View 1 (cartoon, rainbow, N blue to C red):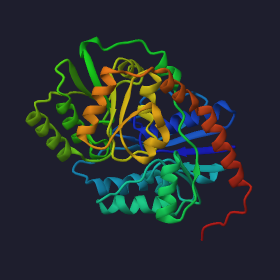
View 2: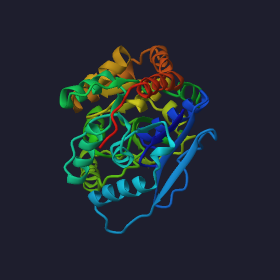
View 3: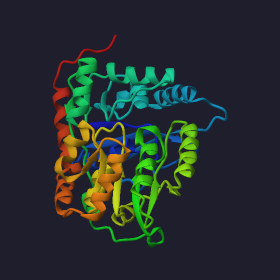
Length: 356
């Protein structure tokens, strides 16, 4: 089967991590897989090496000075759409709203739902839900949102997790001391302001707050400025690492005292599952999707005070990590790839209408 998986970036964001891991698992099963994406700012490759059995098509997208977010979205769709050749594939599967708009007739994975204020992005998000002819969600909770909001019945295929890569990581990063770790950068959806407040309430001078990641298409400079101002007001001095090399991330996870995951919206919680695989206690916001995925193995909280208390409990009375590691090990990319193939074959067997 000739399969095209489309993403919007080469950077280490959750959807891109998912795309590459799924592509490699499909290729390991003998499928002919090509990953299409945009190479922003001169990128000619992904953030990590990719299995050579996966073909890569990276379409250059040079930076444009002074370009707004909306303009960047429209240009991204146009450039990827002009380069992509859908007739070369039996299955076209887009992993985000930009690539779904660029691909045309496609399968779409809805990782999570967002509310956007930028008009171009709001329209992109809507089209990328209503136009695809088949949909995948990585959790039952997101599938229920899609059904309630659009009347669309999506197939649920959970993420895989590279559990062994995190479980076998050696300790590292001694220069950081004892720390609470959050991954995903500083942005509204990641609950970064709430995390600052919770860390201040924790009031433990032996701990540092470490933030990793942060590659994003959007402009969060205003939020970042507010976050930095709030950190000063609270007397918190976070360590902001920015993007961490792929090979170094497992040790960073493994060495954390606790992993904080106060996101306001998620589809699965891959970073938190990787932390569990590394044997680290996870404190997360109490969202239906995260209750669904993590069950009894995570600590849940609704607000900064609750997050602080949950971190205090996780630090003072850590649970046996075996349950979390066992949960993470259940989610394999091989299983995800086989479920995708089952879906693809069922779609190719249908008499699907050809768009007018």
